[in-house]
Image (cartoon, rainbow, N blue to C red; front, side):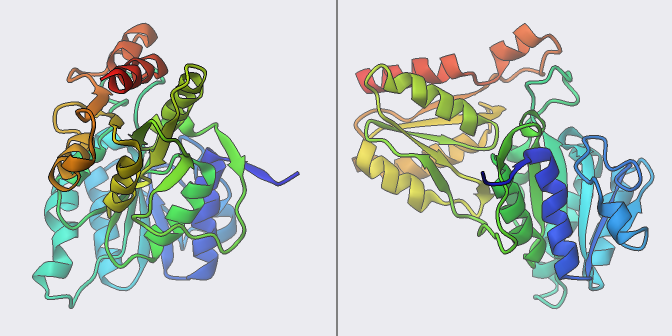
Length: 326
C-alpha cells in the first residue's frame, strides 16, 4: 500500500523538502517553532532546522510581512505564515503595495522571492473574523501569484514551485482540508504554478473549483452520475497564473460551465473565469455560465447558518441540474 499523508502534514513536508534542498529557505511566523504551529502545519521544522532558520515572531502581521520582504530582498527565500487569512488585512500595505511592486519598480534589479502562507476558508464554525475565503483579495493585486491546493500531494508540489518562484506567492491552505489524507508523492514532486488538474472527466458539463470546493464538486459529481449527468471537474490549483486553456478546452467538450467558489459572489474569482469564458469561448456555450459562491454576508458562527452561506454539495447539484436542463 502506498504511503499516505494528511494535508496538514504535507505543509510541513513540503517546506522541509525545500529547506533541505536550499539553505536560503527560512520560515517565520507566530508559534511556528517549538509550538509547531497553531494548526500543526510546521511540525518537525524547528527540531530539524533550529532557530537560525525557523523564526518565531511577535504577534504582528506587519512585522512578519516586513521582515519577510527584507529577507527576500537580501538573498533569502522566506516562507512567512500569517495565521489566519483574515489577518492579511493587518499587513495589507506590505502585501498589496510593497512586496508585489519591488521587482517592477526596480526594473528587475531587486526580486522578492517569498511565500506568504495562510490558513483560509470556512466550514468549521470559527466565526466571521476567522472563516473568510480571501483569495479574491490577493487576486486584485497585480504582481502576486496565488496557489490554493486541494490535496496533500498538491500542497507538497505547489509549495516546491512557490518557494522556488522569483515572484511572491500567496499560498492558501484550507482549514477544512487539513485532516484529509492522500498519497505521499516522491521526493522530486513539483507542481507547476498555473497548471490545472482534472480529477474527474465528464461530457455533460464542466465544474470549475478551487481548494475546498474541489471535494464538494467531486461529491456532487458522484451524485449527479447516479442521475445520468456526467460532470467534469477541474481543479484550478492556482489563480495566478490562471489556467484558462484547461477551462476553455473542457467547455469546448461539455458546452456548459458551473463555477464553484467559496469567495463571496460579489467580486469572487469565479467572476473573472466567467468573464474570460464569455470573451473567448462564448460560441462554445449551450447555456449561460452559472456560479455557486458564498453569500455576500459575514460568516456566521452557527454551523447550520454557515452552511446557508457557503457552497454545499446540494447547491452544486441543483445548479448543475438546471444547467443540463437549459
